[in-house]
Length: 295
Image (cartoon, rainbow, N blue to C red; front, side, top):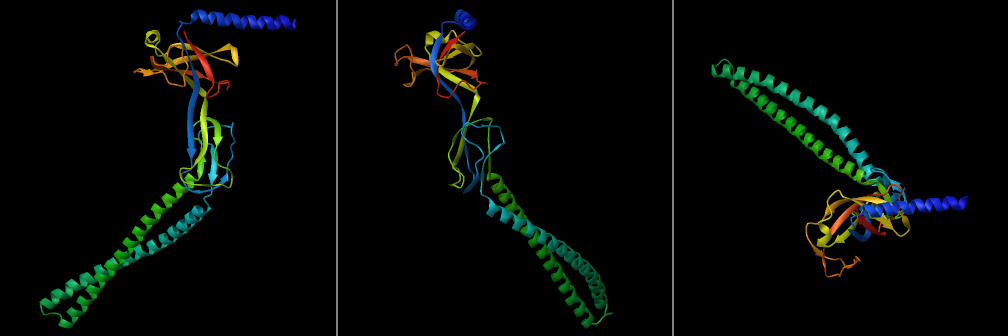
């Protein structure tokens, strides 16, 4: 019974392959599987505090893949926040000082105008006029000084705000996250290692959505189109076909790349064709050679 079941499964697989062969156009090619690869780098210098991923781990966008030491930057942020809080109280007092100086200037200014008018009419003495003039000048100077102090505090706040923005950016840079959904192909650092800005941390690849590039001569080019279906076959699964779809056809001819084996002479001009293939089970691997049959 067991042998019969095995024979039945094999026969069914061969029948499926035979049916698929009947659907193929006769256009075929060979190539190696590729996937989108993304190198994740550090944006700042520091020591690797944590490396929570290993090669082969599956990650999602935004998931932490490394944490760079940011203790010094964190302390700097705390100092900036304390400075901003102190500056807030100082600024409130300076605003009150400006208001008081303005009130004093308004009061002395009215008195100055009144006594000056009286002095011009000889109804006030020269001493009275000189005294109020001196008081008015003092009020003007006091108000100007109060405004200068307030403006300086506001400029200081703007400076501290800019520094805080930079520090927050540096803190964010210390938390290295995945830029894509994918699989960790390689890790380039170890916990405790010192990294430099732009230093490589990990390499990710989207192994769920792969592609293969084949090269066809001009005679076969007229028999394919964007969106056309294709089947891929790999040596480790000779009885299984992986469905694909043509997503790109090169607009210009080129000489066959030296790393590609074709049935034609290498000097022939060919056109690159890209076929996308889904890989939900992870059977297909980067660099794996495959035969492609266009339907």
